[in-house]
Length: 367
Image 1 (spheres, rainbow, N blue to C red):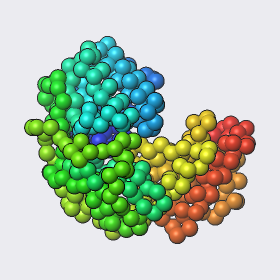
Image 2: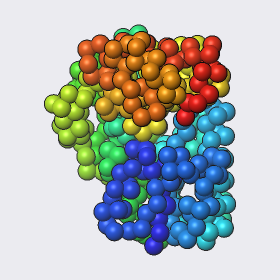
Image 3: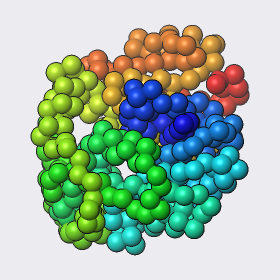
Image 4: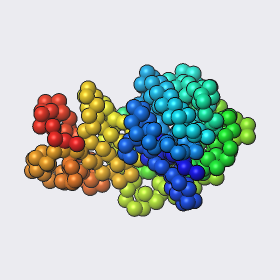
């Protein structure tokens, strides 16, 4: 049985790939990194050919209402059409618990529309709805940050570990299509503000978290219970304390958590620049020129390593401009874990953006 995972580099998709590969199943990791783009359709037919199951775990790189709606509508239509042509027997999609109870959120409206397209589509399906991942708490915090304060609604959620979501997807892949929605949630209910507060505290993040019922989550006011799982939901095994001990505390011991904190702070500053935008996808963030959409740099969130693609002649120039800008294959890199790393990374991004805006001809050979 051939299983194709779309979005195989994301939080759930990457873990599902590891799980399936460990069980000896034939799996294909389909993502832009492997030359498969569900949005444009490039490489999709070849990747899905001969597949029995397709798992759609991809996510939109933006939360803007129109763009996110177009992303899910287009990728879902492309996947269903390619799957029907290839004779796929089970289409599995990852969605969000409570998506249909928060109509003011453009992102969640787009997920509901995606679910409706799958239900009315040509393939047998199962939809797994998940509560917020522990691994995405930093993104939730960043979205609610104003200066040194994070404002979030105190609505209760049952956050879940990405490992538990991947395990649920793995079980669904091995079953017959259910033609329905299945929920998965974590084992404990926490206020959204309390969840973020505890994770930031464990990460030594200095931001202060305030409960604010007027604050928005995914662009909408969030009522208590709006993201509650339905009856018969699967329950993940991982509690927040266990995840913090295993993940955040481990990163702190190995010196990577400060780099991650610095990476988040850097991205918040860059996202406020008038000619740049930040796209987060799984363990990486891409900084792009807002007008042209060209990638200025990629930031590895776990390690705090920034990589800026540059042609060889500009790599030599960059090496002379700053002592912390290190040449690497196809560009320049900065390590945020050093004391002066964050400032050096921000300087590199500003220089790279200036090249894009004022000297694009110098970047003609850039990858």
